[in-house]
Length: 259
Image (cartoon, rainbow, N blue to C red; front, side, top):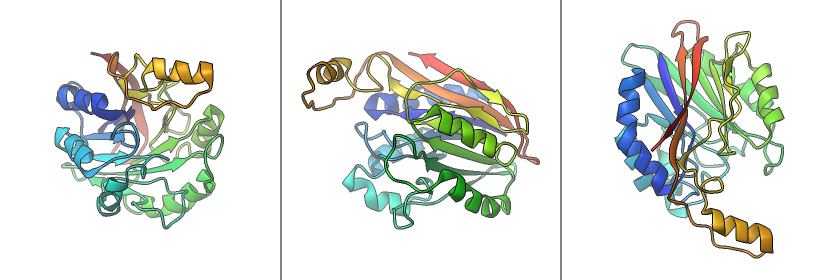
């Protein structure tokens, strides 16, 4: 199967990029599945029914997320009801959202997706190692094709998780920093890995926010109201080929398109 995973979609500029250009990417890469991280789609923090439906209509099949998933109060009921959005599984069980989602392809194959947050330089969360260890047997009963989003700050933590789960999942993709890394590879036991898929949105910014606002805050220490930038639009993503039977990754390719 051919899978596209799109790095954190930021605000209206990111959504507009997907609406205008995802169909071309689908044709270019002959995609079977298109995924994205959704935690920043609504004004940079959280997701709402309106913003999610825009992206579903544009061709996104399902979403992973992260620590900002619940930042929009008006989106909470939608998150609790929409099974195509998965929450980080190492937050408390009471947190709204689904632990995983299974995508059924026209070919009859299935792809499972799940996500975790890191513990280093992040808020309190349970061990991503333990939580994924507990979840994988349930996923493996349904499919060998599994994609895990590690939403984390620390590169070392993502790298450690990639080695621990190499050969047990198809893809480990890092998110959260909004900075695409150049370390995509096929690991020895068959897992495709990249430390961070990057950000889809305005790159003439500081990780999506107007750069002058961030510079003022950093140089003066004074609080500022953040606003989403509008310039330097890019789609950051990764393309992965997965063997439908074994679940092993066959190819990983980093995508960075400027518009």
